[in-house]
Image (cartoon, rainbow, N blue to C red):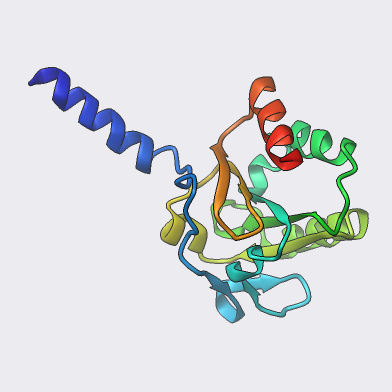
Length: 172
């Protein structure tokens, strides 16, 4: 009985504390607009855009943890995946930091200039944490298939093995 209780706690913890999305499922639709956030230009962002006919990597990042997984984005960028088959979205968890929004906006706009093919989005109210169960105050990276189903999902700092795995998953 004790083992069953410990196993149950571990499974529940894995599901809710670590914040990884279930593999093979399409997460619930989220629309970020107005007071909830959206693209840097103020237009809405809809998670249904992840169903785009190409694989999409989504970075959901607390601005205080913005450098935690740079090695992942560097590894993906080094592969030079064709943009008609691969895309990226970076969502800033704006409510997870003490930094003022205007300072984060400046940094995001600078990143958008540098990485023109990445869609940058602001989540002002932790909507992906609340609706998808992602980890707050951290760095979450998910890979979505052409059909919007989750192919890969990791929260926290990627290991070298996980970097190789996500690159291989993008390669298909």
